[in-house]
Length: 410
Length: 112
Image 1 (cartoon, rainbow over the protein chains, first blue to last red):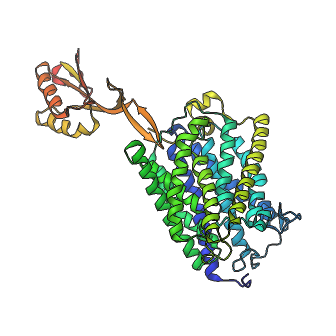
Image 2: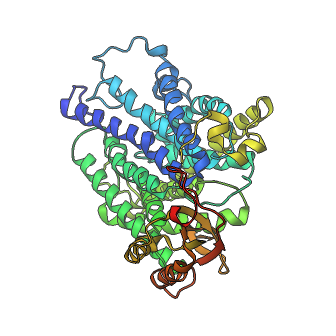
Image 3: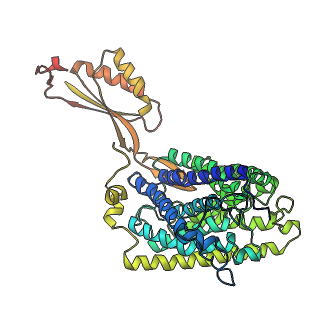
C-alpha cells in the first residue's frame, strides 16, 4: 500500500476521470439510446438516463457510498459499515482509504458516476414502454439494494475481493450487473407492440457512442486511481480492444449480410469497451486485441440469435452487449491477467488456474444477486403501481403522453 | 389548363427544376412525401435483423400549365427524372377548371 500522502497529479487525473465518466451517461448513453428509438419516444429515452444520473447522485452522497465502501459491517463482507451517513464527518482534507493519494471526496465522486451509468445502461432494455414514475422508484431501489452491495463485494473490500476476483473497472459490477437487471426487467415488462429496431436518428447514436468511447478512458484508466504507468496501460488496452471489436463486428456484418453497417460498427465498439473494462488494468496490449476480436462474436450471437430464440424484448440490446461482453471480459481477465502489468492479478495463462474459478464465482454471484433482487423489486413495483404504460400511450408515443413534449416540431 | 403532378426521386429535384426553368416553366410547388410503388420498398439491416422499409421518401411536384404547354413539361420531367431503375416515380395529369391569382383577383390562363 502506498503512503497516504496527497498527490496532486493523481488528484487532478481522478477529477478529470470523474468528469469523463459523467460524460458517458449524460449525454453519452442518453444519445446512444435516444437515436435508436422511434422518434415519438426520443425524449423519454434520453430522460431515463438523465433522471437516473440525478437519483443516483443524491443516494450516493446520502448513504450509497457509505454502505458500499465502508469497512465490512459483518464478518462475511456482505455490506459496508455506513459511517459518515448524510455525508457528515467527511473532512475536505481526508484521504481515501482505498485510494490513499487522493481526497476521499474525489473517490466518492468517482464511484458515484460509476453507479449512475450502471443504472442508465439498464434503461436501454425497457424503453418505449416503461412508466417514468416506476423507473424513478426502480432506480432508487435498484441502486440501494443491487448496486451498493455488489460494489461492496468487489471493490469495497467485501467477500469477492477477499476471494481474489478481479474486476478492474466494472465488467461484473457495472456491465454484467446492468445486463442481467435489464434482462429481468424487460422480461417482466413484456414485449413492445412494435419490436423493430429502426433507429430514428442514427447520427445521435454515433455521437453517443463516440462520447462513450472518449469517456471510457476516464472509466478504465481512471480506475488505476493514480496517474501513472498503470493508467497509461489501461488507456492503451482500452482503445486497442475497442478498435479490434469494431473491426470484428464489421467483418461479421460483411459475412452475414454482405454489407458493413455503421450501427454494427458502434455496437462492436461498445462491446469492446465493455469486454476490456474488467481486464483493463491487468492485461497486455496483445491480449486486448484477442479480447476485443472475440467479444463481438459473442455479443453478435446473443443479439441476432439468442434474443430471437428466447423471445425477450431487450429493446436496445443491453443484455446482448453489456451482459454478454461483460461476462466474457471477466472470464478473459481470469485468463490473460499478467502479473508484470499488475502484481494484483495473475491469470490462467501465467500459471494461476484458480483465477478462472474466482472469476466464475464473481460472475455467478452477480447474476444471482442482480437477477434475483431486480426480480423482487420489479415485481413489487408492478403490483403496487404498474411497470408499463397504457396501450394508447405506447402506441402514440411516450413523449407526448408522459411528458407533454415532442422531440421534433416538423 | 392542366395540373401536372409528378412524384420523382428526391435527388432528381434540382435537375428537374433547372430543366423546367430552361423551357420557361417557373411556377412549381414542391412537397416531400413518402410512398411506395410496385416494388414494395427496400430492405434495411440493423444489428443483424432485416426490415422492409416500404414507405420511401419521394418528392412531389405540382405544376399548372396551359393545355398546349403540358406535353413539353411532361417530356422534360420524364427526360430529366428518368434513371431507368425501379423507383423513378410517376406523373399524373388532370384538367384544371379555374386559376385565380390571389394578389390581383384575375382569373383564367393569365393567372397561371
